[in-house]
Length: 339
Image (cartoon, rainbow, N blue to C red; front, side):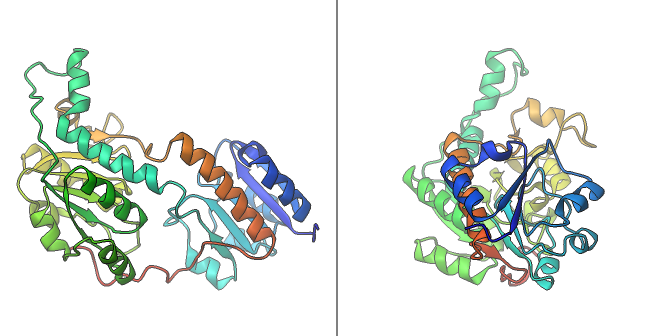
């Protein structure tokens, strides 16, 4: 029964992004206002839309900046449901102080992102992007395609949450030895229960042939791999990251690649090219820098699963029982990753 609550949905797909069965249940529970948008709205339009809204459901692309001014213009807002896993761009403390819950989707893309991390490892090991470029005449003929086998290599996973633990499972399946590190005590306990030997960060960077960054972006704890940590990597190591670029000191990493301290770096984002201070044309041409443009989650199953999880989370909030709520103190970090 509709109790008068208003849900505002901001996304590119609009109502088409919600499974029909859940959308109908949501419309029976609350007043659903759908506002398809191509991107983030300005402050004035956001304030106007949110003036009489109880629940904001949004994709990351469409999410307005949730600052003090906007929240003051939205006095009824009680719940924010975000179609994303990461929320480092949101002032969760501000939401907490105003009694507004934040729901995320912590597990909708875990498998895909862990598989993507493994794909990045294999791509660097087998020189796949470079071999493809060489076959098309797009890479210098003198660049070596020599790679290495990953079986028997040590994989060091930085960030042993859902994605890191799943990566450990599939990496062990192809013969890698896995170690891990995390600054969250609960994450360490869960990883150890999964059979992942936990070490301090300094030991991980010194021992790992492959370092995989699977950590969340927590204010005050990045970069994870700063210049000192990169310099301490095992000679010839490769690094892959399915986290935010800020987790790695990019200039230091590019210098380490050029100095052949690091054999390869793959990141699920874009950190170099014509629009960057260091376009790294040389490293891209040599196949030693691989960028995948935040595409790890873009899979058939993730889109289907995410749409249903998003709709379920909106309905739960509309019923007054939000799920997967996060708070400012949910990450229990003990110090910094490095240093």
